[in-house]
Length: 213
Image (cartoon, rainbow, N blue to C red; front, side, top):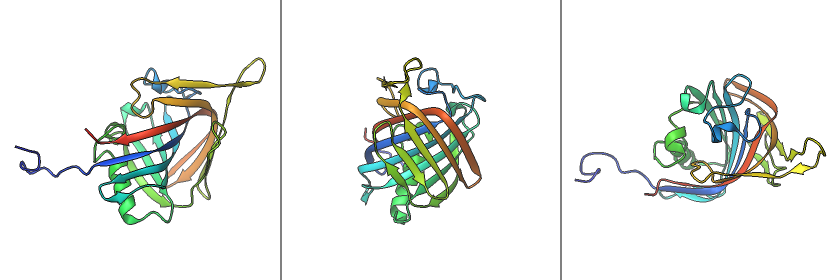
Protein backbone atom coordinates (compact mmCIF):
# COMPACT_ATOMS: atom_id res chain seq x y z
CA UNK A 1 0.00 0.00 0.00
CA UNK A 2 1.36 3.43 -0.91
CA UNK A 3 1.23 6.47 1.34
CA UNK A 4 -1.42 7.99 -0.89
CA UNK A 5 -3.55 4.84 -0.72
CA UNK A 6 -3.22 4.88 3.06
CA UNK A 7 -4.68 8.38 3.15
CA UNK A 8 -1.52 10.47 3.58
CA UNK A 9 -1.13 13.47 1.31
CA UNK A 10 1.66 13.17 -1.26
CA UNK A 11 4.63 15.48 -0.75
CA UNK A 12 5.20 18.20 -3.30
CA UNK A 13 8.68 17.90 -4.81
CA UNK A 14 11.01 20.86 -4.64
CA UNK A 15 14.59 21.79 -5.41
CA UNK A 16 16.23 25.17 -4.88
CA UNK A 17 19.80 26.04 -5.86
CA UNK A 18 21.58 29.24 -5.00
CA UNK A 19 23.83 31.14 -2.64
CA UNK A 20 23.62 31.65 1.12
CA UNK A 21 24.86 34.61 3.16
CA UNK A 22 24.98 33.49 6.79
CA UNK A 23 25.71 35.88 9.65
CA UNK A 24 25.47 34.74 13.28
CA UNK A 25 26.64 35.72 16.76
CA UNK A 26 29.16 32.88 17.13
CA UNK A 27 32.87 33.52 16.95
CA UNK A 28 34.13 33.34 13.33
CA UNK A 29 33.97 29.80 12.00
CA UNK A 30 30.89 28.96 14.09
CA UNK A 31 31.58 25.98 16.36
CA UNK A 32 27.99 24.80 15.83
CA UNK A 33 29.46 23.25 12.67
CA UNK A 34 31.85 21.12 14.74
CA UNK A 35 30.61 20.57 18.30
CA UNK A 36 26.96 21.59 17.97
CA UNK A 37 27.13 24.40 20.54
CA UNK A 38 27.50 28.15 19.99
CA UNK A 39 30.51 30.21 21.05
CA UNK A 40 28.42 33.33 21.58
CA UNK A 41 28.88 35.07 24.94
CA UNK A 42 25.51 33.86 26.28
CA UNK A 43 25.32 30.51 24.49
CA UNK A 44 22.54 31.64 22.18
CA UNK A 45 22.35 31.42 18.40
CA UNK A 46 21.10 34.54 16.68
CA UNK A 47 21.37 34.92 12.93
CA UNK A 48 20.55 36.79 9.76
CA UNK A 49 20.68 34.55 6.70
CA UNK A 50 20.09 35.66 3.14
CA UNK A 51 19.22 33.26 0.33
CA UNK A 52 19.39 34.02 -3.38
CA UNK A 53 17.66 31.25 -5.32
CA UNK A 54 19.26 31.20 -8.75
CA UNK A 55 17.11 28.31 -9.96
CA UNK A 56 14.40 26.22 -8.42
CA UNK A 57 10.79 25.20 -8.17
CA UNK A 58 8.28 23.68 -5.77
CA UNK A 59 5.77 21.62 -7.66
CA UNK A 60 4.72 23.84 -10.55
CA UNK A 61 5.72 27.08 -8.76
CA UNK A 62 8.86 28.70 -10.18
CA UNK A 63 11.16 30.01 -7.44
CA UNK A 64 14.02 31.16 -9.66
CA UNK A 65 15.35 34.63 -8.90
CA UNK A 66 13.79 34.93 -5.45
CA UNK A 67 15.66 36.63 -2.61
CA UNK A 68 14.67 35.79 0.95
CA UNK A 69 16.09 36.57 4.38
CA UNK A 70 15.57 34.75 7.69
CA UNK A 71 16.13 36.58 10.97
CA UNK A 72 16.29 33.94 13.70
CA UNK A 73 16.72 33.99 17.48
CA UNK A 74 17.43 30.74 19.30
CA UNK A 75 17.91 31.17 23.09
CA UNK A 76 20.40 28.31 23.24
CA UNK A 77 21.90 25.88 20.71
CA UNK A 78 19.83 25.35 17.58
CA UNK A 79 19.04 21.74 18.47
CA UNK A 80 17.59 22.89 21.82
CA UNK A 81 14.81 24.61 19.86
CA UNK A 82 12.45 27.32 21.11
CA UNK A 83 13.67 29.72 18.40
CA UNK A 84 11.67 32.47 16.74
CA UNK A 85 12.03 33.37 13.08
CA UNK A 86 10.99 36.30 10.94
CA UNK A 87 11.12 35.83 7.18
CA UNK A 88 11.54 38.65 4.70
CA UNK A 89 10.65 38.45 1.02
CA UNK A 90 10.51 41.12 -1.65
CA UNK A 91 7.17 42.79 -2.45
CA UNK A 92 7.16 41.19 -5.92
CA UNK A 93 7.07 37.67 -4.44
CA UNK A 94 3.71 36.10 -5.28
CA UNK A 95 1.37 34.42 -2.82
CA UNK A 96 2.07 31.06 -4.48
CA UNK A 97 5.83 31.56 -4.10
CA UNK A 98 5.44 32.63 -0.46
CA UNK A 99 3.34 29.55 0.26
CA UNK A 100 5.96 27.30 -1.35
CA UNK A 101 8.83 28.93 0.56
CA UNK A 102 6.86 28.70 3.81
CA UNK A 103 6.32 24.98 3.37
CA UNK A 104 10.01 24.46 2.52
CA UNK A 105 11.51 26.61 5.27
CA UNK A 106 9.27 25.23 8.01
CA UNK A 107 10.11 21.63 7.08
CA UNK A 108 6.61 20.65 5.97
CA UNK A 109 7.93 19.18 2.71
CA UNK A 110 10.93 17.39 4.23
CA UNK A 111 14.42 17.44 2.80
CA UNK A 112 17.58 18.69 4.49
CA UNK A 113 18.30 21.07 6.07
CA UNK A 114 14.69 22.17 6.64
CA UNK A 115 13.35 18.88 7.93
CA UNK A 116 15.66 19.53 10.91
CA UNK A 117 15.79 23.33 11.16
CA UNK A 118 12.04 23.76 10.69
CA UNK A 119 11.38 21.92 13.96
CA UNK A 120 13.55 24.30 16.01
CA UNK A 121 11.64 27.58 15.64
CA UNK A 122 8.22 29.11 15.36
CA UNK A 123 7.51 31.76 12.74
CA UNK A 124 7.01 35.15 14.41
CA UNK A 125 6.15 36.99 11.23
CA UNK A 126 6.53 37.62 7.52
CA UNK A 127 7.69 40.98 6.19
CA UNK A 128 7.65 42.23 2.60
CA UNK A 129 10.51 44.64 1.91
CA UNK A 130 13.19 45.28 -0.72
CA UNK A 131 16.26 43.08 -0.28
CA UNK A 132 19.57 44.40 -1.54
CA UNK A 133 22.40 41.85 -1.77
CA UNK A 134 25.84 42.82 -2.99
CA UNK A 135 27.59 39.60 -4.00
CA UNK A 136 31.31 40.30 -3.67
CA UNK A 137 32.78 37.12 -2.23
CA UNK A 138 33.83 37.50 1.39
CA UNK A 139 33.09 41.21 1.13
CA UNK A 140 29.37 40.67 0.41
CA UNK A 141 26.52 42.46 2.14
CA UNK A 142 22.78 42.15 2.73
CA UNK A 143 20.58 45.21 3.27
CA UNK A 144 16.86 45.46 4.01
CA UNK A 145 15.91 49.13 4.22
CA UNK A 146 14.08 49.88 7.46
CA UNK A 147 14.85 46.46 8.92
CA UNK A 148 18.56 45.73 9.00
CA UNK A 149 21.89 45.20 7.35
CA UNK A 150 24.76 42.69 7.37
CA UNK A 151 28.27 43.22 6.05
CA UNK A 152 31.10 40.74 5.71
CA UNK A 153 34.85 40.90 5.30
CA UNK A 154 37.82 38.54 5.45
CA UNK A 155 39.49 37.11 8.50
CA UNK A 156 42.74 38.91 9.27
CA UNK A 157 46.17 37.64 10.22
CA UNK A 158 46.54 38.92 13.82
CA UNK A 159 50.24 39.70 13.32
CA UNK A 160 50.41 41.23 9.84
CA UNK A 161 46.80 42.34 9.36
CA UNK A 162 46.74 40.67 5.94
CA UNK A 163 43.73 38.74 4.67
CA UNK A 164 43.53 35.23 6.13
CA UNK A 165 41.57 33.19 3.59
CA UNK A 166 39.89 30.24 5.32
CA UNK A 167 37.36 27.76 3.93
CA UNK A 168 35.54 25.08 5.92
CA UNK A 169 34.72 21.78 4.19
CA UNK A 170 32.00 19.70 5.85
CA UNK A 171 31.82 16.28 4.26
CA UNK A 172 28.49 15.58 5.95
CA UNK A 173 27.25 19.15 6.14
CA UNK A 174 23.48 19.30 5.65
CA UNK A 175 23.18 23.08 5.19
CA UNK A 176 26.34 23.54 3.12
CA UNK A 177 29.39 21.51 2.17
CA UNK A 178 31.95 24.27 1.61
CA UNK A 179 31.84 27.58 3.44
CA UNK A 180 33.95 30.66 2.76
CA UNK A 181 34.61 32.06 6.24
CA UNK A 182 35.00 35.62 7.36
CA UNK A 183 34.07 38.21 9.96
CA UNK A 184 30.73 39.96 9.80
CA UNK A 185 28.52 42.44 11.60
CA UNK A 186 24.74 42.60 11.43
CA UNK A 187 21.69 44.20 12.94
CA UNK A 188 18.00 43.62 12.31
CA UNK A 189 14.72 44.50 13.99
CA UNK A 190 11.33 43.15 12.89
CA UNK A 191 8.20 41.58 14.36
CA UNK A 192 9.53 41.60 17.92
CA UNK A 193 13.07 40.42 17.13
CA UNK A 194 15.93 42.86 17.66
CA UNK A 195 19.48 41.61 16.97
CA UNK A 196 22.78 43.46 16.75
CA UNK A 197 26.28 41.94 16.67
CA UNK A 198 29.70 43.10 15.59
CA UNK A 199 32.77 41.17 14.38
CA UNK A 200 31.15 37.74 14.67
CA UNK A 201 30.75 34.81 12.31
CA UNK A 202 29.95 35.15 8.62
CA UNK A 203 29.97 32.37 6.02
CA UNK A 204 29.28 32.45 2.28
CA UNK A 205 28.19 29.22 0.61
CA UNK A 206 26.42 27.61 -2.32
CA UNK A 207 23.36 25.51 -1.55
CA UNK A 208 21.42 22.80 -3.33
CA UNK A 209 18.38 21.77 -1.25
CA UNK A 210 15.63 19.38 -2.21
CA UNK A 211 13.35 16.66 -0.89
CA UNK A 212 14.26 14.26 -3.68
CA UNK A 213 14.78 10.71 -2.50
